[in-house]
Image (cartoon, rainbow over all chains, first blue to last red; front, side, top):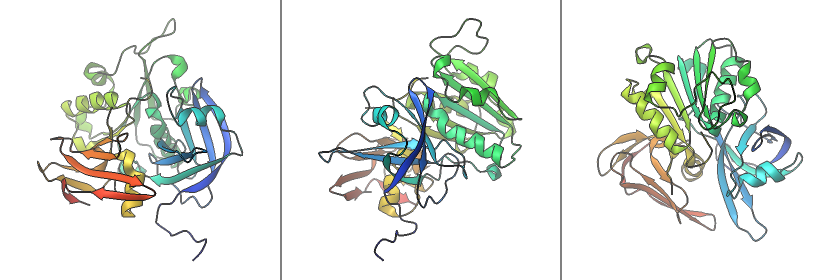
Length: 247
Length: 81
């Protein structure tokens, strides 16, 4: 069986970078050509492994930004003190090799059959798996109503801004800018809290399905507020990125 | 060190168990709290990967990988999968 990958067993493989595109000053979307990609589900992630010349290995997880059926893409925010992200955002070029394994995840995923209405809550780069869900909804012709509440530091930090400005039918996008707002900004200008959620979130009585992704402190605050508001805990899916990224 | 959650060890668990585990049920052996693996508290940057109960904080699982071999301690769990 030499040279034959064991089906169903997750193994590291080498992908080729097809393209690198700037989303913001510190965020890049990296499109990958992955041989034998089995297909992914909306909301899943993959692991990236970098190996130093002296053998030091660093692994990180990155959410898949593209919808199922689209070329695999990840969106990476540069963390200034990061071991992996500065290489991915600053050094990586089309044609480079990148070691990865995936797709990974069976919890923070959405299929049209899961229904809604959907409440998507993103802090900073926590938007990435939610963007995959939004694209999947659109590509499958789902009519599930969606509200996306997206917290960023400034307008310039909003990832996929142009895409969200042209949001699909049935998708409401609500921004909050926590650090700086441009002149004339009419949107929210504070951190997501219970009061803001009371204005934006679907009423719990409508059996909404919530996906919350972002820095750990953001996810904890938002998910607890939703449960206090009457959302059943099993209808609030959470994914925590740690202390990374800004909201 | 700030915690993440069980989503972050999906790849590790796939490698160890050979199947997707983030949506698998788990039960804490200390307090009986039942949650899907994705919802557990995970610390990644120690000498090993430590998974704790979101309810009582007990250590549920520990993973240490050396030279491509992963040692797995599941002693804190009453149920997994």
